[in-house]
Length: 359
Image (cartoon, rainbow, N blue to C red; front, side):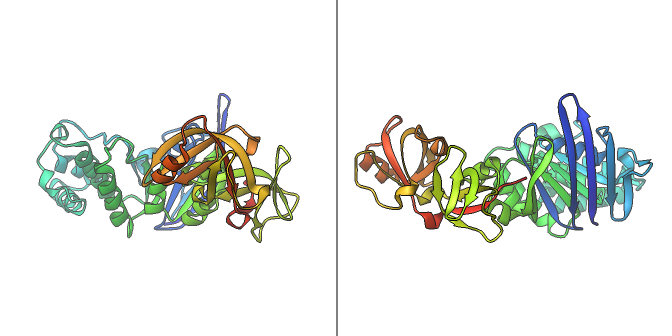
């Protein structure tokens, strides 16, 4: 059931203007910093927020626009937020049965549907428990079952893992990946690239009420065109203007790199490279690599990052401030690095990809 949506609104100094399509049965992830408008999009789709202009068509059925503005209960949309929002006085099975009951199903058929969905989300054993008797992860399983028991044409997920602990989140993420495989068309709001990679077919990155990047999930996260996307993807990004042999930064330095086929010399572009492509040397030590991609700076911070230590740079030319480099703990010890240490960073031109910047 394909979703085609255009939403616009102005609220104080914030304005939203987005236009996107989600192919039937696929998952679109909306990424973006706080205040970019992600949850506002979900509210507009669900009919929970008034918008100044809307054109929403789901499975060739118009929900809003052209004189139509269906109320939320007629849109056939399921909504799952970070809080399970279960009815505290009802058991798990009755919470799930509420969805088909609200659509006119009888008590017995509704209970059968609820039991089937509780089994689908591995929560059948909790059927007779009330929400206060369930953990956060168990409550979210019941909430997922309730959202899907209504057989929505569109499922909206608003940070569904944000309130879960580190042990519960992976299990619920895996559960959603399984049930969405043959599930409804879905729009997912998240700040975690792992959620997008695990669940979404496509990604749209939002900033200040606009979509600034979009495409297949892995393509967008592998070749980010905005600083936000690069940050969540764990990549370094330097902005500037494309030149024949790389990128000229806004402060005038050239970062040598390889231009992608769609990059146009003279137009806005970004240079992207991984933290493990950045070599770190003592400030007065011997270093190798292209001198054009060598910069003197200082260590701002050293942070554990999985099996490596991530160094953050401070000082030096503007483009180098905030650069990340990954080192082994042994390398950090051998170099005697600590915040404030003077270092030289070197990045081979062959590891730097130059892409067009986002509009």
